[in-house]
Image 1 (tube, rainbow, N blue to C red):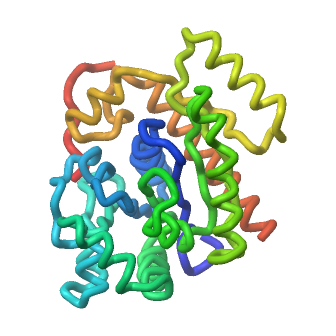
Image 2 (image 1 turned 60 degrees about the vertical axis):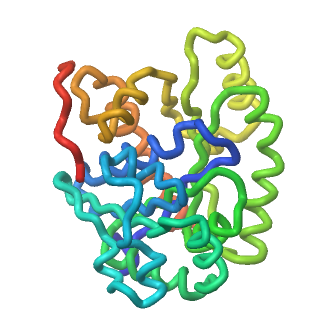
Length: 273
């Protein structure tokens, strides 16, 4: 990498169920396969990313424990068995921990912790919860850029402007260097002509750089991968999906560099963790 601190990329959305966590996990694995050192930060108190990676729901090794002085920062990292990939959790085990994390840390302490983690890798990908909670604001305030999975559905498109205004406000008040890396058309039903029409209209209505070229289709493979706690890219029979995320990872690296310059088998794979 060109700088001493790895690039911090927030993967976020205004809606749930859009493939945000799957994108974080699979893009992270692909970046690691490409030779980059990668940390994934599970910023959702519901621990969706940790569960998708095969870790237990509850953990007392996370940012909450570090910020309260219980553990060292290095102890928050859960090392992967594959590809030099690691995962960091919030450490939230009780609902009250979310409020404590937001109240006690302040943006500066959380920012410094995330930057210190980024100093140990090439890329740190943050999987946020959906919407614009205080915790999401704090985590995205640590990011260099934002990637947004976007389904081609009416509700998602109609509610998008409000979320974009949230990101703009975040840039104006918290992180002036935050950049929008692009939106990913995610969980697209290729058999639904209405979704394809929405995708076409969006591509024609916005600059080409707004959207990644790669489209992630709707596929039941994601449920199978979630049930086994592994990235979908580890299943041999889903090579097309694996290639899609590999293409996304390549696009992400290319886009991020530009932002810096501007400012087959049914066999279950081994778990990552």
